[in-house]
Image 1: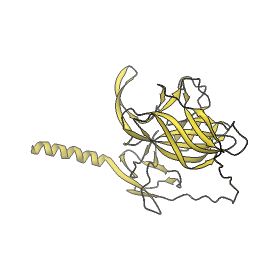
Image 2: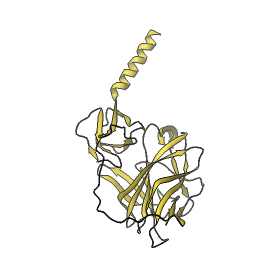
Image 3: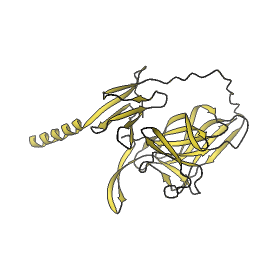
Image 4: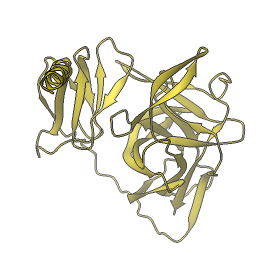
Amino acid sequence: MTKFLAVTLFILSITAFSQNRIKILDAESQKPISYAKLTFKDKHYYKNTEENGEITLEKSEEIFEIQSFGYEDFKVQQNQPTYLLQPKFTNIDEVRIPKPKFSKTFTIGKVSKENSFYGVHNTIWMVAKELRNDISEAPLFIESIKFYSRLFSKKSATIKINIYYNENGIPGDLYKSVIVTCVKKQKITEFIFPKPFTLPKEGIIVGFEWILNQENSYQKMMMINGEKKETIGHDPMIGSLTENPKNIILGNLSQEGWIFVNGSNNSSQITKNLGIELKLTN
């Protein structure tokens, strides 16, 4: 018993030494920042904090930058147990913003329960789709977004939905970003925005960015190059449509930021269209 205990303590001490637990906080409120994104020097992946703003890093992982929507990007100069992100404030010239009338309802896009899904694969961490405003010349407002989701292992999992300005079919500046929780028993996920916001005349790009943390991760066996290997996956998976892919964009993350390419003509990686439905009001 004593020998077993000593071996256990030795293993635990090695694990603790090879890992580093840190936390990300709001510099003003000192509250944890959930799902902040960390990129690393000489690594081709990123990780996200848990809901409590904490994350465990391997000894070989040296943070390059910390990002979170609504905060200034933080370039790391030296390692420390706690990082404080400054809230981002934008000076906006006073303009007259129209208010919704809520007298009519419209939808853009389509969602259906099918058996094809997008998930984290190789270096593809975001899949997105262009949604154009072909309905009305009058101002329209986005009320909610709906999509089909499936969870492989977890009872619930989170994913980040990024809404970008549309610059000729490729994501421009980030317009909105929200964290959405998908539930295993609920196949169609609908997120209602706290406050409707304007749909630009040129439309938007809606992207699903996977949150790579322990809360969403699971292990599974897969056939890779003819060999059965254990791999790490992340819930949720996002449903697609059995129709030709149109207006699909793929996102790869580099240390310079997201690199987007049009994936509609890339038959080697894209075989289905992304299922998204927006609910609009006038």
